[in-house]
Length: 318
Image 1 (tube, helix red, strand yellow):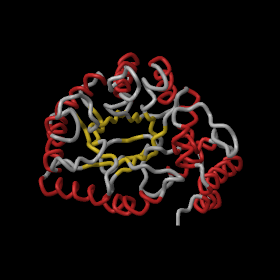
Image 2: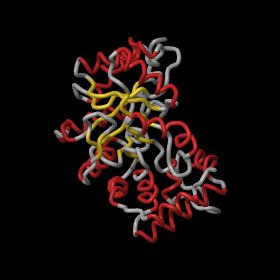
Image 3: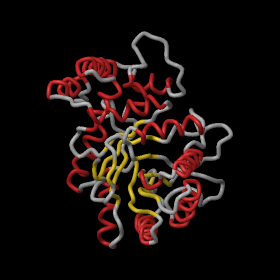
Image 4: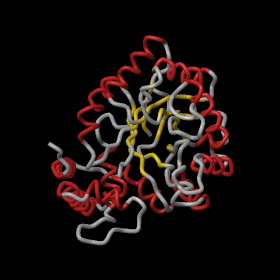
């Protein structure tokens, strides 16, 4: 287990992403994934109020509702850290989006109801809201912590300068601070995080829980150069983002290291992220119980200096 920033949360080195719940897998399949993840020793589940409103017929909150039904039926709320998010538009009224006090206070009650819990372990700003003063958003989050509805707060998709500004406001006003940040980061998405956020978060002891830890599945090995695209809703985006010389070079290194250390490509890619200085955990999604167990197994993969160097060199962006 790892400590999240300066918070009191002890979390797994691989977090389970709740994005597929109610989207690519139904409730029964989602519960099997959750059972497998927790059964293998995982304890941190990441979701958002907006998952998965993009699916035809969904209204948002489907992932939260499934997680709520799961932990209630398993009586396991105490055994897991639940992280969810607020920001994305969830209705037609003007205030039903962003990080205004009004919307945060309304959205958290909706999330608590769907999650069937009276507290959220980590409540995160899903994105920055330049139209709302940081003082307003952070005061709202501070009140939620004071009222016991939220234990800690975090943010996602914040730049280093904006996160620094938020930390300054929290310090100046005496509000709780963002204890974590969620950036996009993996072996083929390195430059933005390493040049912008990484030096800052290490200096301020901010926890880092990165999304797209497997580059939307590209680093699992299911995409191969010259082969037909696999049946995936994300295949087109993966092709556009990663089908290039650096992407294929990185994937080849991942597969080569995986053979040497007797692990899967997914485990190697996640293990590389896990050992990054200052990193708390990558988030990875699973659609089967076997995948959930495989992903969590990345925490047990030890990459020696030679393996790390091979991956570093293959994925180098400068």
